[in-house]
Length: 197
Image 1 (cartoon, rainbow, N blue to C red):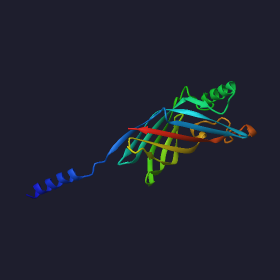
Image 2 (image 1 turned 45 degrees about the horizontal axis):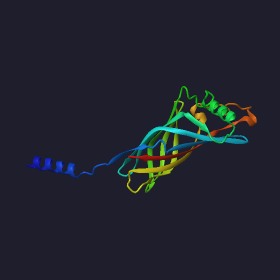
Image 3 (image 1 turned 120 degrees about the horizontal axis):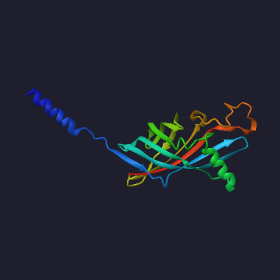
Image 4 (image 1 turned 90 degrees about the horizontal axis):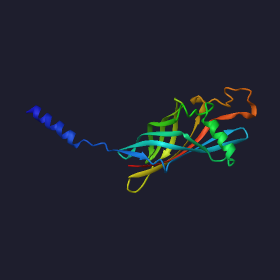
C-alpha cells in the first residue's frame, strides 16, 4: 500500500511540475547591423559588418543563451568618401595586419551568462572570438519585445581590445617607437539586433 501511495505521489508531482517554456528566436540578418569604430592619434574610422546568422534562446520569458556569427568579409568603411582611399583601408583591414579574413572569415559572440537585473534588463557575460582567439565581454542590454511576443530587438554596445585577438598592427604595446602613427587597441562596437520566432 505504501509503495502504491509513493508511486501515485511521484506521478502527481511529475504532472503538476512546472514546464520550462523555451523559444528559439532567429536573428533577422537584414534588419540587424554591426557598427564598428577604430581610433588612432588624430582621427578615427567607422564602418559596418553584416551578421551572417544567429539565434537567441528565451526561457520562461527571459534571455537564456545566444550565438551570433559575423561575416568578416563584409567589412566596410562608411566615413571615407574617396573611393580609392576607402578601398585601400578596407583592403588593409581584411589583410593579415588586421582581421585576415581569408583565413578567418567569421567572428562569433556567444552569451555564457545573462545576469538579469530588472524586468528585461541584463548584464550579459559572453565570449567574443576573432581570429580563433577568444576574450571575455560584459555587456548591459535590454530586450524590447513586440506586443505579440513573437519578435524583439535589443541594442548592445561594448569595447574590445583587438590585441587579445592577435591584431597588433600599429599598437603601442608592441611597437614602442611608433609615435603619432599609433592605432588605439580599443575598438568600439554597436550592435542592433532584431529577432523573430
